[in-house]
Length: 626
Image (cartoon, rainbow, N blue to C red; front, side, top):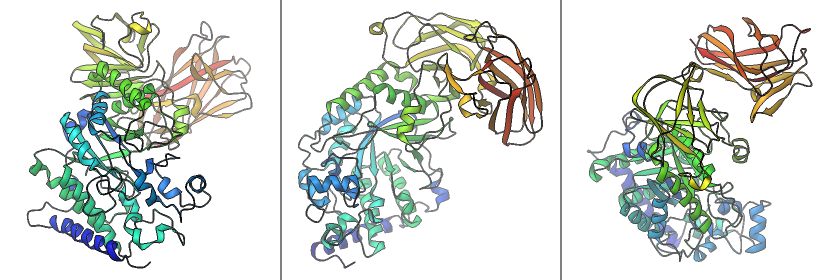
C-alpha cells in the first residue's frame, strides 16, 4: 500500500512522536518495574469490589445508520452481508458513500453530559463511562494524535471530557473503554475504488505501512486518555491480545504509576487471556461463571439483546432480566457492567431511561444486599443454580428463566441475604441452609419493610420462612425480593457444597424409546419411567477423590420399586418407597460411592427387579463428599 501523503503524513508523524514519548516515559529511571511479575501484584481496589454495578455507553459514528449493530463500519464493506445490502440500498455503494461520510451526520446535538450522569446515578450505578474509541477508529475525546475525533468534527465537543466531569460531580468512578486495538489489524475490508484503500483516510481505517507506527498510535491514544481524564478503570475490549507484550507492559506500568500521583486506586480490565492473570480483572462477555470465583470478575451485558449500539430494530431486555443477572453475577463474586445505547443525536431513548429507572428503584430498596456485599460459602440454590457457560446469547435468553425457586446468597459481615428471584406464594424453604443455632436477637426481615417475618426450624435444621400475603401494589419492590437474616449461625447442607455432585434429568442420556424428560411440579424430571428394560446414564465430573454419600429425589405413586445405581467399579442396590401421590416427592438415602481419583465417571441407573418394577419419577441424584 502506498505511503500516506500530505496532511495524513503530518498527522502520522505527530502521532508517532507522541506515542514514542509514551513508550519512552515508562522507561524513565523512576518508572516501575516492567516485568509481568511485578505488575501482576497490583491489588483490586476496594471501591470496585464494593461497586457491583456500572454503566458504559456505546456511542459513536456507528449509531448514525442505526442498523444491525456496532460492527456496521466493517460489515458495510463485506459484499453480500446484510449490512452491505442495506447500505447499498440506503446510501449507495461504499465507493460513493464510505463510513467516513457518516461523520458529518454524527452531530450529537442532544448530548447533555449532566442528563446522562443524572440517569446513570438514578439507575444505581457506582461507576460509568463510555467507549473512548471503538473498532471504527473515531476518538470520542479531544485527541492530538487522531484527527478523526469528536472535538474536531461531528459533535465538535470533547465527549469523554464532558461526561467524565459530570460523572465525578456525582461521586461516581470513571470508566474508559477501548476497542481500538482491533482497528489496526485489517478491521476494514478493502476493494479497489473504496475509501478503505485511499491513503488519505488510512489513519481512520487503520491502514499503516509501518506496523510500529500503528502500535505507537495505539499506545499514544491510551496515554492521552490516561493523562487527560485519569480514569479509575480502563477496560480493553476486543483486539488487545494481538498487541505485542512490549506495548502492553509499558501501558500497564504507565497507568499504574499514575496512582500515587493522582492519590487514588485504578484498575485495568481485559478479556480472557489478553493480559496475565492478576494484572487486573477479567471481563466475561457474554459467558458467565458457573460458580463463585476466588477472584473478582466483571461481566459486560448490553441493555439490548441484539446490539451494543442504538439501532432501529433493537430488542431491549426487561428490567427483571437485568436485575436477576445482576443478582446472579454478584453472588458469584462478579460485577455487572451494563451497556446502554444512545442515539446518534446524543439522546438516550425513553424506553432505555425507563428500564434504567426500574433498576434504580429496585436497588434503592435492595442495594444493601448488593453494594459492598461479598460472596457467601455458596452462591445459591434452585433450578438455574449451575447454568452451563453459553456463548449463544439467544440461547441464553431462552434457556435461563429464573423462578421463585431460584435463591442467591450474599453476605455483609455476619448478616446473610437471601435474594429470591420473584415473590413467593407463601413461604421460602431453603434446602441448602441448615440452622446450627439461633438466639433472642435472631430475626428475619424483608428489605423495604420494618416488620419481622415468621419462620420455623424443621427437622434436619431446615429453615422455613413465611411471607406476608401482600398485593403487588403493597409490596416493597417489583421483581426479586431480599430476606435479611440476622443473629443466626448457619451452615451449608453438605449436598450444596461446591464439591458436591448434582445429576439432573436434562443431563442424562437415555437408553430406550419411551423414557423422557417432562415438566412436573414446575421442574424437570424423568417422567413416568415405566419400562424396566430402559436405562438412564450420566457422565459426571468428580472434582475431589473420597467417599460420597448418595441420595435421590423421587415420586413413586404406584408403589415401591427396586433399582441399581452403579459406576464402573461399585454398585448400589436401592429400594425406593412409595410416595403418597405423584405430586409428593421424597429424598431417599441410596448409600455411598468411593472415588479414588478425580475425573469423569459413568453412572448407570436401572431396574433391579424387572418383574416387580413400578413407574417412577426421578427428579435428581445428589452426592456429597464426606
